[in-house]
Length: 127
Image 1 (cartoon, one colour):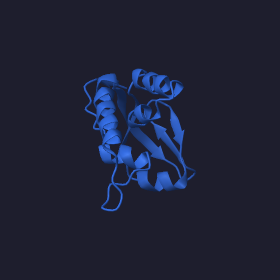
Image 2: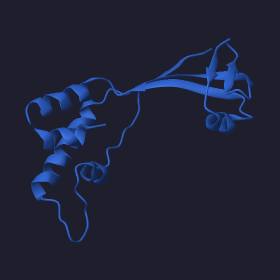
Image 3: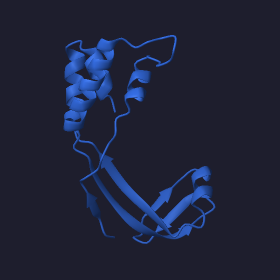
């Protein structure tokens, strides 16, 4: 099993989604205040500097998919899934197993803002 590490990942923070999560809806009848827009844009920009994205993944051959929801892999491991997932994976020859992180810097900054009561600054950074 070969493990492949990836470091250079581009992440896009959608301003509209951030505002929606904060309860702001950009439509004709309700305008988001300029200060909220400014804070949101500033913190989104800061968020890009806090990301430390990393991925590690491996392509593994599927030996057998059982009707009991088990997938037997080439390395002797097996995975159990719901019937829904098993039905989606039927006929698959390989699975790609991986782990993804954006690091802890962003989460630490969000916690710092929340502890200081800076909620408008914390929300745009929430992953």
